[in-house]
Image (cartoon, rainbow, N blue to C red):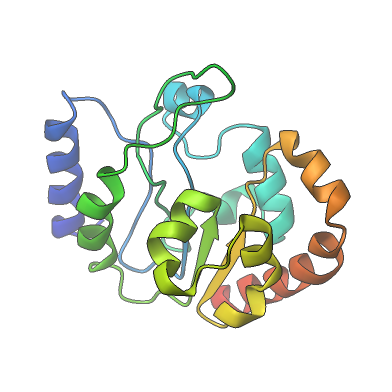
Length: 187
């Protein structure tokens, strides 16, 4: 980690009552994954995507655990680096002001990004702005509009089985392109 990235991490910790943030980033990272916020399990372990969603995401990407957790290959920047808490159904959303404050500082230090993966609606709304489609499904279905720099994805939660059942094109069309883009970015 560069000294600037280490200083940013220290600032995040200081701004959040000394709590350890759940993200990873090194200047050499080739792929940036921008997700929602860590779940309770990931917050407790301090490891991003340390849950069934992470297992599914690594399968979608066609990478090993070792590759995924190598910060010189993957930067993992959730929209909030802390578990937001429980809502009536699922988790609370990430804090809206968190990513705009910290992401630009971190991303400015990453000098070899070849691919950005936007997982879920929160990251897509922030990073696709005027290019966002009317729904998450339409945005993901239009993945080719964002290539080669960006691929929008649905969240890999096992709870998304209904969405995947209604959208079989995701597995047959998007995942092969995703895996190919990931391999190219890593090589």
